[in-house]
Amino acid sequence: MQISQFFINGDMKGAIAYMREHPEFQDVLPAYTAIFEKGEYRTFEVPDRLNELLRLYQVYYRATFYAGLPEAEAADKLLAQMKRLLGMPDATEEKEETLTEQLQAVFEAEGYHTLFGKTQGYYGPYIWKETVPTVYRVELPGGTAEYAVNILKGFVFRGWMDYLTFGRYGTDGWASPDGTINCIEQAYDFHSERFLVSLLKHEAQHTVDMKQFPGITPTELEYRAKLVELHYSGDPGLLQKFFAQADESRPNDSHALASARIRREFAAIDPADLSGIQSRALERFHAHTKEMEEKYGKPDDSAASGLADR
Image (cartoon, rainbow, N blue to C red; front, side, top):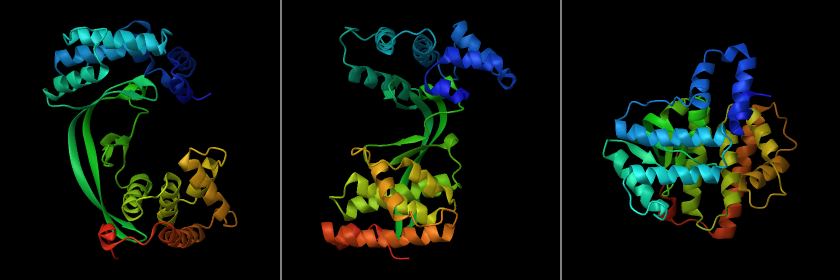
């Protein structure tokens, strides 16, 4: 069993036991035993009041992932203690939205950007120092599009998985309600295909398609974006990755359904033939564009204005 499975399962006792049995973890083991066995929590380079709030999250993680307290019970204690620390009245009845607003105000007053709430079922704040809006010109099969990305820098706290693994694993970013992608600087190589193709081209194609075909379904969106990835990717293993995601028995999973269509349409392609995969992807993309135009109508000039001809 890999140690990552202990972290994914939130099993810190198992993770620490694994570390004790494997010499390669002896350098980090003391940090884990200090937090989870001794309750000696980390101190961050932020003002004392912010450290007090972040300590409450650390207590919550120790209770949930090490001491075995049910998450709901640990969460109730976390929220109640935060309200008391912030001097909020009616600590047991105050709405969580109001607490979040108060937390944001406290951190933002010290110059930090924040995102609060739950990630995969557990509370964990995202606290960082700088947001850098960046516009990329992205080449797509239909032309060139501009796509906005916020680069987030100077992280103090990056959710529960980052905390449990001392930065080894954690969230890479998220989408804002307006569709803007927020990328955590430390999680990306901005010259890599993972960023330039799997993120930028994929998401930019979504933006273009939603403008051109307002009625487009999530599965159609994912299918087209995956074709774009396959066309521009230099990794023949990407096709096999999509094959592995394919599952037509999951009607609400747009990624699984889109991958299932790709598996059908690429079944005859040699998985080691990169140029063949790229050509087939472009062919299917243009054929699908015609399908979309027949289904939803051709986009008018204003809808197509986000693309410039190459």
